[in-house]
Amino acid sequence: MASEDLTFEEYMSVQKAFTNYSRAIDDRNWDQLNDAFAPEGVFTMTTGDSFAGVEAIKATLSGFSATGGMPYRYLHMVSNAAFWKEGDVIHSTSNWTYLIRRTPDENKPTMNMETWDAWGVGSVGTYADRLEKFDGKWLFTDRRIFNWEFAEPTGL
Image (cartoon, rainbow, N blue to C red):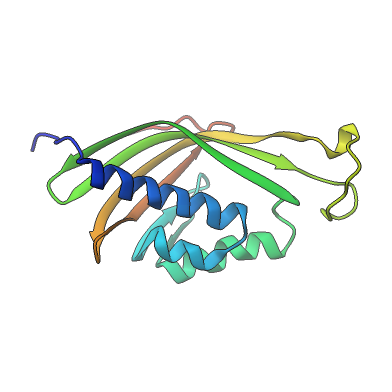
C-alpha cells in the first residue's frame, strides 16, 4: 500500500500525542499518558523491555521517577519528525534529545547556578512510532525508543 499525506487535522492530532507524551514525563503528570497512548499501546525501551497497556506504561515511568532514576528536572525535545499514513495507521520516526538538570542535594531544587547545577544532555536517540485513531484522537499503539548511546536504530 502506498503511503498517503496526512491532513492538517491528522498532523495536529499526532503532534498532540507527541506533546502529551513529553509533557507527561517532563511534568511527572502520568495521567497525561492517557492522551498519548492507546489503552493497549506498547512502549519498548532501548533495553528491549516492553510494557503493554497505558496503565503498565504509567506505572513503569512513574516508578523510575519515584526511585530517583530520573533527575530533578528534565526536558524532552523532539525534532526531524517524519510522518506517513498507510490506511488507518500513521507511522513516524523522529529524533529526541533529553536535557537533564541534577543537583547535588538528592535531586531537590536549588537556586544555586554553579556548574554542578547546570543543564546538560542526558541522552539522544530516535523514536519509531505507530499511531491509530481512538475516539477521534491519534494515539500511540507502539512506541519504540532507540538510545544512540547503546544502539543505532535499525529496521525503521
